[in-house]
Length: 150
Image 1 (cartoon, rainbow, N blue to C red):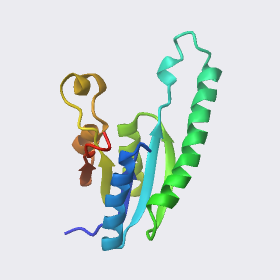
Image 2: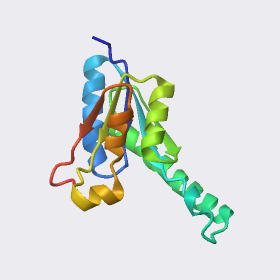
Image 3: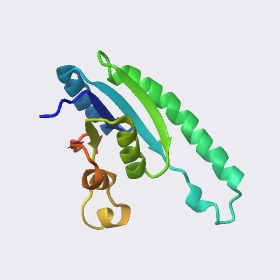
Image 4: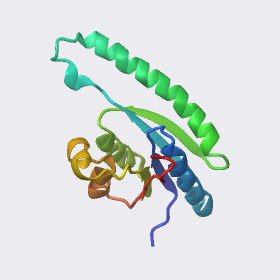
């Protein structure tokens, strides 16, 4: 069986992300692995053609990323105690960015949350977790939120 030495933990910085971090930390401690924590901010580039000046969108995305980097720093410090963990804020479509970073970093496992959407919500919003599970070349552990986290 392949060793797990590097884990990518994908979070959305919601309350549910704490549970996802808990699983990643437990696995990392037990396996002696390091963790790469990623959050993906939307690029909003698809809105450039809607009479919104590109520099306005770029400024807005810049503010999102700046705020996310501060939140990520605090999130990593609070939730990954006792393991080697480094946070990264990515920009783009979440599933694509998670898969791309996982390949770049040659991770052995992806740990991420799922919102467990059903029916019309799933059709309208899709599922980042589903796209990652279907396209990842490494195992993916998905953590479903508890009733209190939803």
